Amino acid sequence: MVTQSKTKKSGEDVSEAAQMFQAIADRGEVGILVLDKDDRIEFVNKMFSNITGYQQESLVGKTFTDFLIGENKEVFESLRKACVTSTDKSRQVVEIKTTTSSQAVTEMCCAHYEMHSGDKKTFVYLRDISVQQKLTKELKESEKRYRELFEHIDQGISISTREGKFIDCNPAILKILGYESKEEFLKLDISKDLYVTPQDRKEFQRLIEKDGYVKNYEVAFKKKNGETIPILLTTQAIKNEKGEVIGYQGLNIDISERIRMEQELREKHGFLTNLLESSADCIIVSDMRGRVIFFNKAAARLTGYPTEEVIGKFHVSKFYSLEMAREIMKKLRGDEYGDRGKLENYMLTVSGKHNEEIPVSLSASIVYEGQKELASLGIFTDLREKIKIEKELQDAQVRLLQSEKMASLGSLAAGVAHEINNPLGGILIYASLLMEDFEASKDPRVQDLQKIVEEATRCKEIVKSLLEFGRQTDSRFEPVDINKAILDGLFFLEKQVLFHDIKIIKRQDQTLPFIEGDANQIKQVFMNMMVNAAEAMSEGGGAFTITTGITSDRSSIFISFQDEGTGIPTEIQSKIFDPFFTTKGVGKGTGLGLSTSYGIIQSHHGNIDVTSSSGKGTTFTIYLPIPMETGR
Ligand code: ADP
Ligand code: MG
Image 1 (cartoon, rainbow, N blue to C red):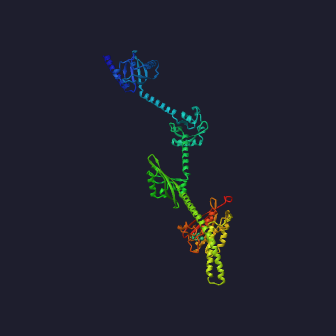
Image 2: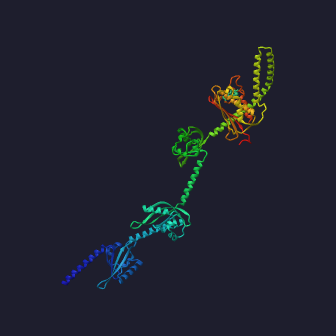
Image 3: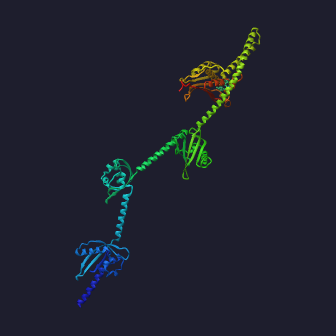
């Protein structure tokens, strides 16, 4: 009984122990199996059923090796064999069949156990490493991808020590710096062999130690062949667990192409600016609000405003009215003055710094970017010179007409004078004879005869000037000292009553060359000028300035007679050179002074100009050519 009860008791103990064992085994993270000598499963825990997906109960009695496919079976056999002979717990990766199509990857180890009864059991422990394996695989793949990127990217990547040696680098950096092998590159002393300026390396290290990184740091590196190459560094510090910097890794970008392009662009830009700057026409560019953004040298010259005073500060309305600006924009946008966005040869006046109105011709265009209006560009051509030349041309035409008129009048006058000269001579002789008789007989009519003789003498004078005007008198050309001719003329006139209230100012150029001419005729011209000036100043007096000099092109000399007299009203300016034109009373003016002078200067291949403003005075300027051998 005792035995019986004892047996029963121990039976209960056994099953309790088994239950406890089951509970312990089920809570573990490891799959546990107990196999009999034929590899049949005697015991299985919950984890193994989790790994394989099979029901725990359905597994008992199954043959374990059926879960192993291919070489996994051999791995298991070797593990089991090993654990019989040694206690060493070696592990192997073994794949186990599951309820799904994929196998579970496990790390397996085995243990051998012999019962009192002599039964041999195999304990199998399995740890599921599917997830871990997957992660490892992924890690390897990503490492591979990074390595590929590192190897194939065309930017240089390098890893270096703080002390200045490379640990690793990619092929791109070797190519950029012209090295054939990584081995020789890794031997370089970075600051000595690579940096053109070793100081740059020190500064780079200072920055990276301070911030932990350096971004877009420009340095010059030496290539293997000694050439210099600009490099842009973007580098990160590598730190150990203690946070100390032990090295650097980063990008080394070759920027020589970029710098070359920048330089080219700068040169191109410089060239274009230069082109615009040196244009003889004035170029003004403004943004669409009218603010001036470009203003070349010619524009500064035309308007008188210096470039730096204008750019970014002036509105175009400084140069012409707002209405005009609007008008121009309207015309630019329309198409009646050239294509849309263009305007050609538009006449307007621009006001300069000193309020002068400058006539210009404008060619303008709108600068577009796609459909958007960016700026307007105007090219202004100064028309002053053109207008001046046009006026000169007109004057020359007038003079030509005048000289034709004079030539015909001259021959007419000369003919008439010639005809009159002889009868006049007769009148004078007979009147003189008569007068002698009347004087002898004390006839009171002798005074009338005297008058006849006087008037006839005056007529003869006029006839003489007429003949001179018609160049009927002889002339002798020889070198003439113009300054002396002026003084000779003045010598006679200065003492005359006519000149009493007049201040004579002489501004004679003493270097004046001689000209070819008839000194007497020229003297006569000068005296005509002097007498006319004095007569014009007879009311109020004033200054009379005689200036001589050489023209800027050195082709002629000039003599100007400037008075402060009455001036010549514009409407009669075109007539003063006509023979017999006079504004002076009968008996006072003959109207032959200027026409005779004109004729004389013409025969000397010269010119007479007159400028006058009513009430202020008149300036006559005579130009006489300098003979070739003395001039220039
Ligand atoms: P005259 O002196 O006999 O009138 P001229 O031929 O010398 O004849 O001059 C013609 C006219 O030109 C003058 O009558 C006068 O109206 C005008 N004139 C000439 N010189 C001057 C001058 N210096 N200032 C003002 N008017 C002048
Ligand atoms: Mg006169």
